[in-house]
Length: 599
Image 1 (cartoon, rainbow, N blue to C red):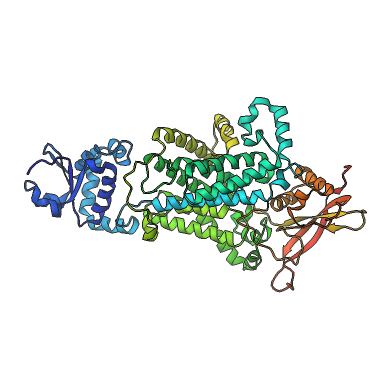
Image 2: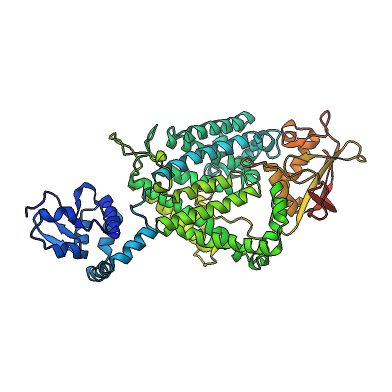
């Protein structure tokens, strides 16, 4: 037997368990170790008895030394790439217990081969296709978010809008001084005019489209993130939704998973990119798990007794027409559906830690839940963005072959070095882990609050969880205008409930942000929603930008002299009492006093 020029690991080529884990070892050691099935290599190593090949793996080193079993694996791990999981485990696991485990597995090789096929498949999974799809969909989400906001920017944040960005920044400049740049990061410190706001939305939409096409993802997504953060900073109430925070956090992590090329080939994944992908999977876990935890941690009786969905379809911010039908389901079915929601949100996220087939099942289950949510409600781009994150759990073998990126090219590909990605990932993981512990009611030291406040302006580490407390009634605000204080004409909104005969409409993936804020305003009081007075003032001034946010302006020629708002209680009609109406409503009280410009 001649000594090989490089180490050789000899294994049982007919054992599924051996083939699968040898492939993992091969990925860690690369060309530094050669791997051969003993059925082909035995004749080249006549000094090794045939029964030894069948008993355990054999590791032959260039000096001719031969080791077997667990010791052979430890010897091969020494050739693994620095920072690899194989090398890390080899340093941490003690040889003696490892040998006992190895001998047990070897004696029951048939059982472990079966379990490997069931849970892991035949080959180690790769996630190149899902990575490409995630980045393309992230670009699509950015494009949709910017396009939706661009059509509303003047009315929400413009000079004649409800909450002018320029006025807000001037106030911050006067009160905070130099610290304003860190506390309120936005490019609109240079120019907060209407043109700048709309221009940022147009630029973001174009950059999102370029990212979706695969052009220079790092540059395009970096600019998208900076522009969207700038808009969120000045948009305040109107851009304070969880999907805005989720887009900023996912977009920030994605920057470190993106290859540094104009036209990436996506055929390989560097170590720094793998670290960032694991950070995205941590976001997947937190997003879903926290959504379930907050429902139980809130103490809301409707989640605990499984009656929450008996109210949800009717009381959610912007129902669809399908919500009316979902609301007609029996109480027993709604309880079962509520139990399923909690079970999925609390259990499925742990699939992130599981093997290939468990990950697939978890991803498809969570995607199905998001599809049902999207089918019965308007949640802007939230469902699409969430599903894009869930796709990261699906390995390449799940997708049709024509989507596979193919073998890696010969041209060198640049990526973020580990010494940059690792500290960023560690810091982000630490802060978000502390936030999760806070949701779990774990008492945390005071310095945690300081850490969270430091990164809070950038929204790169957030907590999640919608509908922690289920609303059981649906108050709606009816806004009316009058020229004489006697005859009142209602304003019609594009998507929120108003006319009882109007069918609830689809708005997603766009978000009518004024309609959403009207839902929140109805849950509180007039004094708690300062923006509502500004909204009324713009209607009294006849602002065309604010009027464009509405479905119809009943005063197209001249604005009214008075505005009033009334609170109504809305409920879906039932099959048995419905004619053509989708809603029935009942007057409750005035929402605010009659307002005029002098007020």
